[in-house]
Length: 488
Image (cartoon, rainbow, N blue to C red; front, side, top):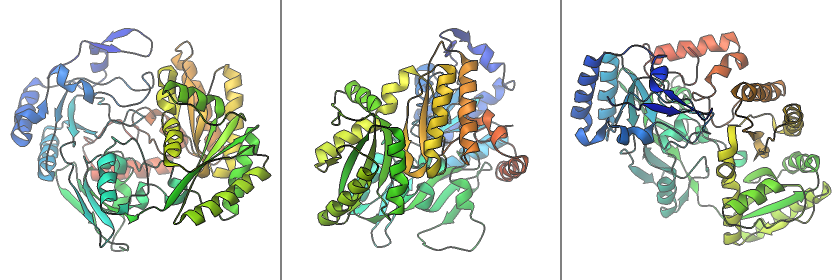
C-alpha cells in the first residue's frame, strides 16, 4: 500500500509518518497483497483505491485540524456496491485480522472517520438507493444515500422527514451510526426516534436484518437501539428503514434579542412550561451572528441586544402559525426581550438559517476544538456561567451557541499559542462542568477518536465493563472501527 511521507500537526510542524506507524501493530506485506487482490475481486478494480492521490480524501473529517487525530495512511479504500460485497469484505477482514474503518460523508466533528491503524476503509458511497412507501409512511435507504437526496425524494413523494440532523452531504448510514440530532430535536427527537429497521453486517460477515416497517415490536432485545449510535464499532449499517410524517405546514423564525443572557435563558423554560413546543430554540451571541453573516456575505437582520434566541415555529395553517408566534413573542417580552423580528418570508427564513448553519465554518480556522456538551435544559444558564469562568481563568475566548431547547451547547475552544496541554485542561474543565450539572460530554457529535480518551473519566467502571462486553459479543477480534467509542 502507498503511504504519505509527512503529516501536518496542530503544532505547525511536520513529523514523519514513521512516528505514527510506530504506534501501531507491525504489518505483514504478504497479507497486504492478498488483501488488495481479494478486495478487487469483490468490488472491482476501479473501486479499490491504494494510491496516495486516491486516498487523501478518505483520511479526514470536518473536525478542527488540531483536534482531529493524525491519520494512519497505510490503508486501502474499498467501495462496495451491495450488501453481499460488504459481507465478503468483512469476512475477508476477519480471516486476515485486518482492521476495518467505516466512511460515510466525512461530515463528523470528532475524528470518527479517520483511520488510526493499517487496514481497510470501507466507503459505502455507491450504496445509495432510496425507496419511499407512502402507504406505511416509511422510507428504506441504503447507507450511502445523502441526507440531501433523501430529503428531496421524501418531499417529492409529498411526505416529510422532520429531522435535520446534519450537513446535507452526510450519509444515512453515518446519521444512524452516530444517532445524529440537530436543531429540530426539541420537537421531533433524534435519529433513534425514526429508525424502525436496520440491515447491518457483523464483523464475521454475517448479515443481520432487524425490525421492519413496524410501529411496535417487542419480540427480543432491541439490537437496533444498540447499533444506532454505536459509531460503527458493533456492525456496518448497510440499510435503514425510516419513519416519515405528513408534510410540514407553515413555518417562521422568531429572532428574539436580549440585553443579557440570563433574560434569554429564563425565556426557554417559560416557553416550554406554557405548553409551547417550537421546532427549535437556538441561542447565539449577536457578535457571533454578525461575524458569521459577514463571512458569508450576508447581513444579520437584528441590530440590538447582546444575544438572541432563534425560535423556529411550525404549524399546520398560517392562522395557527401567527397565533402561536404571537404567544411565544409575548412570553419573550415578559423576560424583557427587545423587539422580536418575525421572519415569515421564506427567503428571510433561509437567510437566518444560513447564517446559523455557517457558524462553525466561520470559526473553524481559529478553532482548536468544538464541544457539544449537553445538560438538562434548565441547567443551560449555569453551564454558560461556568464556561465564562473557565474562559476568564485561562484568558481565552470561548464562543458559545446551540440548541438550548434541548440542553445541547456548542462551545468552541479557540486557538491560543497552540498549547495542546492547555487546550486539554480547558476541555476537561468544560466536561466536568457539564457532568456536575447532570450532563454528558457529548449530545450529538459522538465520541469518535477525538473524545475516546475522556470516556473512562466520565463513565463508571460498571458501565465500561458492560459496554466492552457488548463490543466483544459483536466483534470478538476487535476489527471494527478500533479506537472509537470505547478505550482499549
